[in-house]
Length: 243
Length: 259
Image (cartoon, helix red, strand yellow):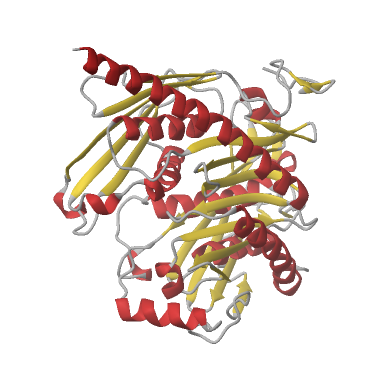
């Protein structure tokens, strides 16, 4: 695809969104049978699935910690998830994404409750459309709750970027490719930032404004995450009562 | 690098100093350790720099050769950044393929140079679609004294600024300097018990829960950022770090990198 002449026209983006609008989100909780917790998360064109296993025994054993659980996070893109086939397996990008995503979730997990055990989070990107790491974190956060892992709060993630000199929330693929900046953040609902990355070009003022914008995006997503969990578990509780 | 072994006593010591407004080496919270940068230290490389940032010591070598461009950018050169935490530099580094710490460091250094558009990639094109210059930036950490990120970023840009395109050797004209447009500088801060410190030493780095690196340009804009570590940061802390990082980057650039 060639660079579109304008990414924003009359304040409306190519996909019809306003600058501060996020893409449609679809959440399904508990979609896998074998995993202890799971979540399917659609974020615009992104389709990701997260599974949580644990707390369980640590393999290899030398990785275990005597005073807390180890949290492991594997972000993986399916070879068919992108335009040109991606070579399967971890690459430098996915190793970095895995690291920062794990660090985005670790602060909310009560790791000290489970010494000598592992909490494994697996995120599989089935289709990618810019913002896969944020979709992955959103999904993983729900999957952790679904697995019954004690958490201080949920974590929500959203990116903000700059296209045609305008700050926009939640970049799509074209905006990511041809935009001027991309800044994914993750935060807890009380405003603690657990992931912050940025590349491109922003002035100091744009950064500050962008950060506030991304925080508003995260809060919107947090509502939806909460609602999805409530939907599954409130109906489950009613079902048990009826029996 | 938080797996560096340190006694609880030492942690207490640094923490208590911090409460009194002091650091173990007597620096102010926003003060850098002594920096020395020597360029052209490796004659075989097209550009090189040796950086000492306090106890941290590393060498950056830039090798440049011709190659084929990526199909989606046929008229642009290629930059590849690599960083190795070799076992020579610390008892906790192991040999083998780079692990996530090294990959993260390399990718952040790379992003700073790439996203600031400090190298004019279109000027690295020799024949569109066929032949372009490939710039390999390799960072070898020799001694880990903390804050490898800033040292590597300073070294990379210093090495690039002295690097030459070896056109004569490849039979494509006269040697020319690498076309530079900007001088990005990385500034790393750590948060310890609510206090923000710049340029963490090894001890400070290993007790801090979080690092935030801000890469800024000549015009005071930001071209890269990376939060690393499990401890969350508040918006106020982040905005404060961004502000002092931009000021500090300006200072470092004027002192060490202006030609």
